[in-house]
Image 1 (tube, rainbow, N blue to C red):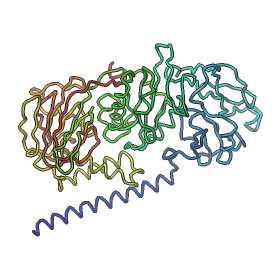
Image 2 (image 1 turned 180 degrees about the vertical axis):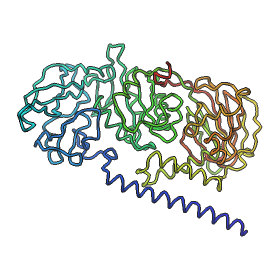
Image 3 (image 1 turned 45 degrees about the vertical axis):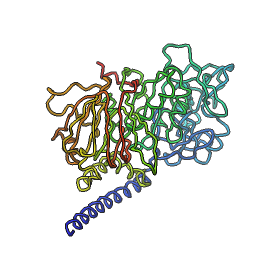
Image 4 (image 1 turned 60 degrees about the vertical axis):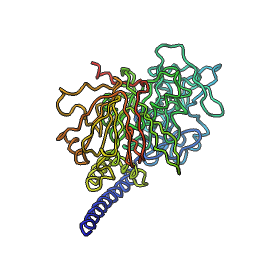
Length: 519
């Protein structure tokens, strides 16, 4: 009895130390964020016409450092610009500018010519003059990105806008049909090269930089092409997508899977998905060649160019049907989820579930990818002391692969892989001798089944000091589970009760791979 009490004291002290460390670090992050004026943490001064942000936080479009209304020089802390049309104003004048200058219109009457939308973005000093107002003014078209010089305070323009270099990826406002402020249909252009680009960004992803992505692309595309997943679901967008398009998913593996699954509701749409890795693990992004993380300084123009040049390929989609064991008191229906990366039962899913609960706390909105990795390390180490009920997992699982029952050694986790990356870049299937295993592919209609003995085994795998149990490849997987255990699919964890779990192929999805991977 005394031994059990001592063990409980050790576990309690361990989690107490972890909690103290993270609380201290998060307090530091909050103070650092508030003092450093991180302009991407939230949108301020949002109005019904323009979307205002602090100046110098967006490098994709130019803006005027002088207020358009009063002419005052605006410092980064007091200056504002519209992330959609590039109009600039100080905090005292932005409401006046809302009434004087319209922002980019997402739709336009088809019977009216669509002309340039010029915005004053600065003044070129004329020699021997001492003030900016005596110079030649620079005007920027919010749609085609052209710059025009003029001495007039405004341009009376009748020239139609052709959207210039991005005309093949922009949805022209005259192609957008709306009803009560919502988009209902996109008219297809008679151009074989027209393939609009849509950007989906998830604010809940690990890097906390999705606000930056939204701001960067709203100035280059039609605002309806930039979707904030915290307020708009992808299912509500794909129903009006044009027949052919490309999608940039800015987020983690869960975000990418969410977008890919939403395309199932629009079978008439051929949409290929690229990834801007902004999650914690980013396993699918690593496999497809988009990298394990995004650059510290994002260049929207280079990202667009990379997506436009990317090549198409297919990835398997797996239907996972979870049939709970029937209970007389609480009958439950079947649950169906879809996987592109992997599905697992056991200690790795338990660590992901611990992190999921921690990330939902208020303070974690000030976290970043580095802190997330540190959290995973500590939570994984904690499961060495408390396995979360994953010990002796092999005694509670009955696994059948393509009709043949699999004999399991002592395990704390069972993983079904569709891609050669797991746990933020670990290629489990290639570890060890290659003589006795088949080649892995993301589009061969097979899952690779592997086993993990403990959380220490996970740590050794991530350091390349161990190899997993590599069981077999299978097209159909059936798992009968007794008792409760953590489960995850593509990084989305939950606690699963007794159930029969069936995995089978559910067609394929179109994804994009950067061009250099084909060279």
